[in-house]
Length: 541
Image (tube, rainbow, N blue to C red; front, side, top):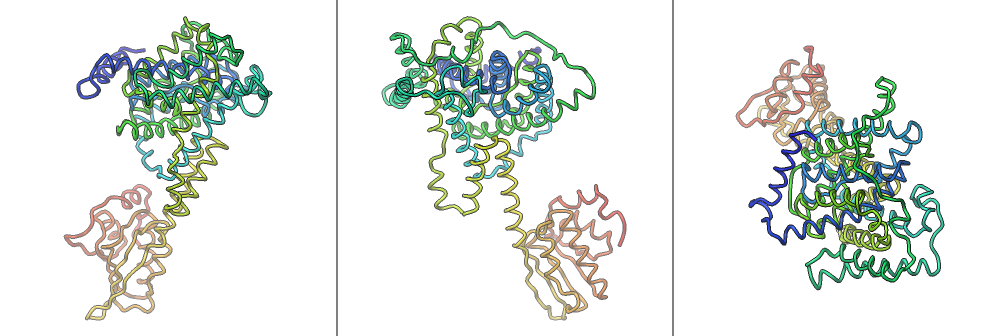
């Protein structure tokens, strides 16, 4: 890390417990550290599993979870968020690793990070506000289902799940007594997590569930799948390593497409997690800062042998539900994870997978938006369709694709509705002139409907078009106005335009149109700037 990163570390750590935020009390520190420990325990099997999915060594996933988690905890946009290796990225990485090897993966992760830094610098993260509520509902519900399905692979005979990519497609399922014992331990963990907050808040319920079940299993020597059955997590400190790939255009042709996809998926998942955590912690903003933090984390990870990562909604929910509200919890989680790798691997490998599955099942219950069914009864059919569509695509494809599909479909529907809103009231003045009072937005979707409002052949010699109740939104709108004016010129009739914004007025005046100016003209900058850049009205007509 550079000095600036160390400075940011100190500044953000102090701001986490400053008087303007939670006060630095022993109770706060205990809650944050125990919450971080809970998250670290839940990170281990996830990081190992996603490493298997990507086709790399488990330590590649664990190093990514540590480095990405630490850096984003220190300089990220939302205290309380947890980042690490994720399945959404792993499924994209698998073909890259299979075809070109792990060194190309490290180079791709570095480039991915640089792209994300650029997105943060240019403040592209603010566009996440364009995600409609119906898409968010589908995203959250699809995510809950994905987390649930991911845990089912733990109900396979140890050794078979990871051999098949740690997924649902292969391996032998537990049956008989082993299955009953696994289910019983999962149920016991869930019961502890549900019941303990009703008795005391002295210790995070997920940590208590993991600890109690682990003590029972280890104390009585119960033969159930444990973390060590996935893989050994023992290792050393991550070492600086420049990716061993040729520095030429051919390498860029290989890694750029993957880097762009990974950067987009990582940012979409991280920014949606930021919004979700923000709703719980009642915090706003930080999107651009989170983009930069994710980019710095992935760039560093690529140089230290990690597979990259992004925000993890499941672990973030564990953290905030356990009381983690500051950066301390995220930093503690990363440091605990590193200590597991360096010192405590034999102990951590004895934790039963059933305890971790039980915690994640409670995360599923807490993540799923159960009020969706009530909202569906009162919302529009289209909103219900979008929610179900995003949920389906999330489960079948990935989170980023689902969100993009949902936003595109919602945008098309919004454009279609507004396209039908264009109308015009017709008035004949005392001197025989005709006035069209346009109502509704004029943009690419309504441009065709706009031109159909006018009847140049039947209209009188003087026609006014009043845009007081409309808005000229884009290049297509300007083009539609010009086409309408051309029709009146061909009929030898005079057309005058009223209540256009200053930029539109200047632009249309160049075409020879008479655009009246008044004190109550609207003031917005949209179509004209674009038209000037593109040369739409570069010549007089």
